[in-house]
Length: 54
Picture 1 (cartoon, rainbow, N blue to C red):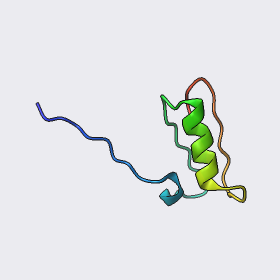
Picture 2: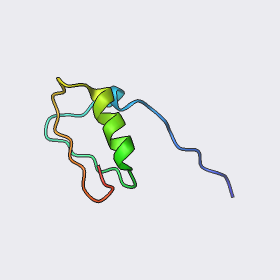
Picture 3: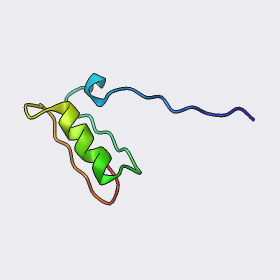
């Protein structure tokens, strides 16, 4: 069996088309706050967090 390594990219490098949605599970509150900080105050997307899901 081959070990799987996670792909690590800054959230700010993600490019989505208008109307796209992405769900990321197992995100801590601290990770959520870090993501918001990385995206900045003038982001053009909506980010929601509920029950460890971004």
